[in-house]
Length: 302
Image 1 (cartoon, rainbow, N blue to C red):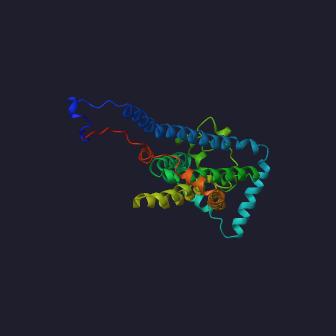
Image 2: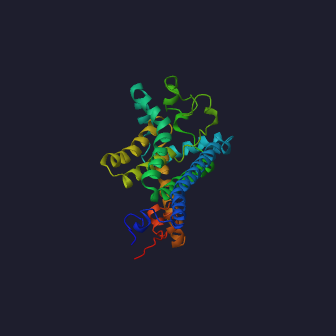
Image 3: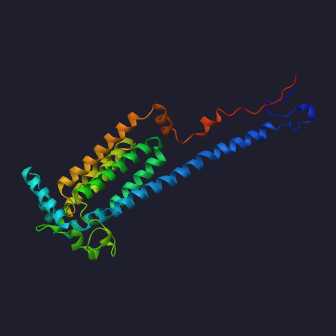
């Protein structure tokens, strides 16, 4: 009689049963185990290329505003007039108060120059590793908002407040204490490659709002959720204090994220349910796949 627990036959001296099935099954299982890893690596590479492509488009946006400096300054004046009419023009007061004190201006400069390059990728990585089912939608909203922002830069170049009389360019004033150039927040020597008329909308604020939204929505600790509320508010203060954005730029940054969310939600509702389901389960879990693999046959004799 076969011992199923041990997988051997006592009448053959305890030798394991010979069968071709286990070897074939082991090969299939090995391939199934490798499949999620290959898929994750391939998708991870795709995500990096996609993000790099969007950044490249952002970087080339400066070519669309060359020669439009007069228009950019005219738009800046219009923004200030609109804010004055709304009793919303607080930038100059905040900018002068912060820039007058190095202990306040220098940290604000560093935050403006670095946080959006650090926090946004970290939130993307966190979503990828911890909340993969929600990653694709969140990433798409971020990229659509960025594309909307690029369209805004192209159609309506706006000179930042730091270029206008009565404002202080804090990053230029303290550039000898930082790694950025006097031209913008770019590293020294590459300031001429940045789009200095990309004030409206503020993608600093838009990206910060997106990060805060994801942290509040998916964070499992109070500190994470509190930081999700604090970070966008801090970003608004920093972009205004350094003279890089108007308050209406911040409002526009919030608007592009909201519009991107509406656009992505609308497209998702138009897609077939089966496609949405496949997209939500792009990464196949091994236990789910293994459940469909036939178990190895074991001969049993009485």
